[in-house]
Image 1: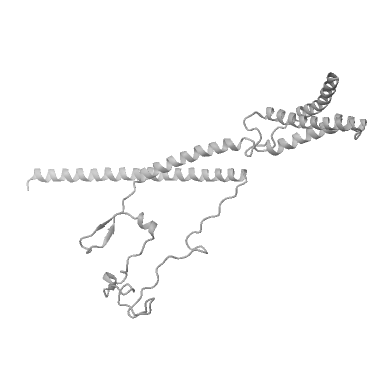
Image 2: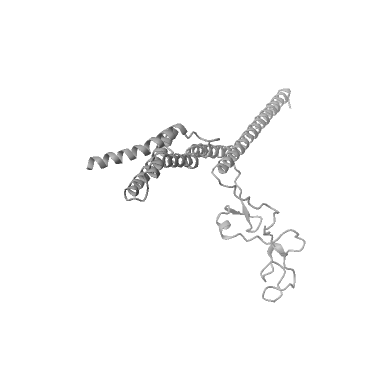
Length: 288
């Protein structure tokens, strides 16, 4: 071999060595990127789990019980029983031949000296339909060999990232819904308070009319009627609106107590009830 051939071979080996180093560096960088992506996704999923726990506690939903893991109490093992040996009785009481224990041919499991070789496990019907396609090995004499397709970690991480984005979107929607109260969720707090106090004052106005009618037939005297109109029913309406706003006007995710606009409620209730009595008097005089 001439010097030029040795030099060409050395250059070829050097190029191959350099290409191998570049491939190893690229593979190492790819693995670092994958590990970084996995760590980031893990932190993101952990934060999502904590936020979902907070939402569940805010709306009064307890965490579901954890699924029993391996080795936990109550788990039933699915290991096959001990193999049936020579002469051992079958379920019908007859001795079985060496092999699978059902009187059939043992195949590879019945060959002496082949320790660890047993019959193929029987899959349930659901798992059998989901099993991967098998190929027949020519050296194995028709023994099926499963072909496992390798999953691309980049594709799996991208799918997990999209699912995490979807979970974030649904979590934000849940937070927006949790920040709305049950009572009149689409209106402002001020409009909600006005509506509640006005409704309670209107209900008290109906009671005023009932007391007026009872006073007309002599069931209620004038002093009692005046006390209920000026103080009793307005106070009942005010405290009723206060309690309604505190019970159904408070969002689940808002810390503290929402504003209940006490001066406004006091003014509405203590004006609306006497105004209802005055409107009744004007109506009666107008009809006369």
